Image (cartoon, rainbow, N blue to C red; front, side, top):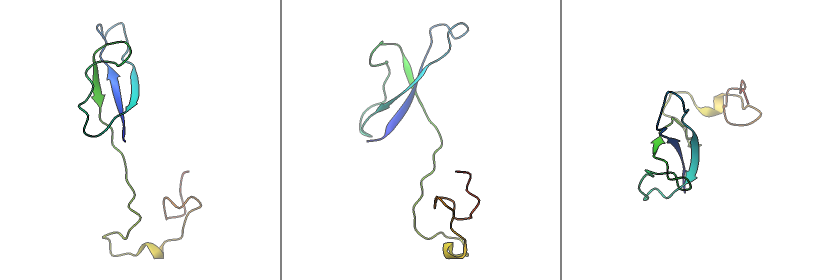
Length: 81
């Protein structure tokens, strides 16, 4: 099941910062509208993410022509990790 991030909608945005929390939910579950413990109103936060397929790319260069990095995630040898 995926983990979704939610932001608490503060009643007074000028004096109270919005808090965030993560919760594991099924993709079939409706988004939360209230915090499960406090009942405060919440909204789901959408964030960009990256998914590696491990397969060949559509580019003309083969992934075999690049040296492998120490972690195997970048393939170019200059991995920041």
